[in-house]
Image (cartoon, rainbow, N blue to C red; front, side):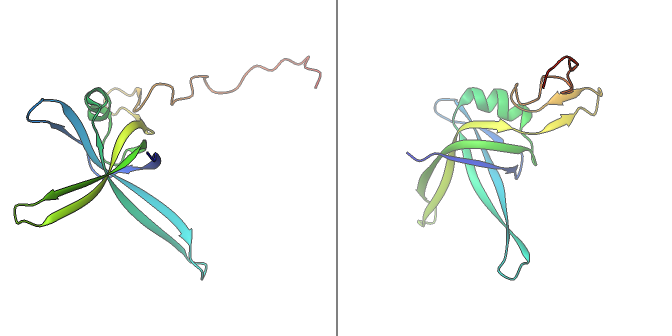
Length: 143
């Protein structure tokens, strides 16, 4: 199986869907990835690619994606590609490629507008927990 990693932005708020038979939940969303390049004549160009994504991990969909992922959120996903085919009501056969998400990291850091405190959207450990990064230097260091 091939694994891919994509960094991009959510095109819309993810939808949390419930299966009719089992009642299990899954998250469905569209991820946009933009590639910037320089044309042969030196002019800059860019190409945006959209990926249909689905996450079947119920805990991730309910406890992570639903409360934190929003339209415009910067995310990094890891997963694999799956072909999906179905026949519509009009008898036409449809084909679709989708990314089955196995791991997702939110990269946004937002300030809460209501209470003024910083809130981290994403996984614990994405933020630098070492403080300001300035350490007291010892003047007796020989080098």
